[in-house]
Length: 148
Ligand SMILES: [Cu+2]
Image (tube, rainbow, N blue to C red):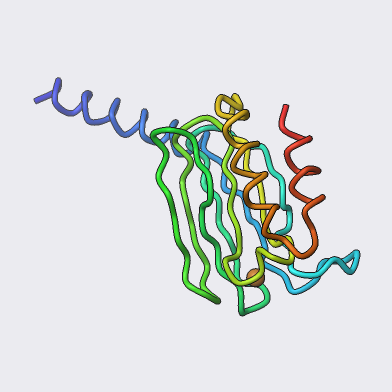
């Protein structure tokens, strides 16, 4: 009995350690940011650790959040318009995402999780995405330039 109890204690201690290390990051979906840029994710580039949680908040309604290019083995996501979306990033690499309604206005974002293993493939995907933009293509170039 004593052995079972100590095993349980150890298991819950390990679970606590994992959850304590994983951070939660918030990205707002905005009609315009403080600098007057329209149709923005804020922050539109973030670097996080494997296992972290990212919460997309519908600060301004009328936007959604859909993965566009993700590392091999990662899970795609698709949020409804005007809804918050929470994802956990379990694979290292570069994640590109968009607001489906405003991607042509440059409403896109980049998440780097740990090592940028798929950077070359992400750049190819980014070129395809920006080719369809009426404005804001330079945003994607800017975000990807911050991947280190
Ligand atoms: Cu939008």
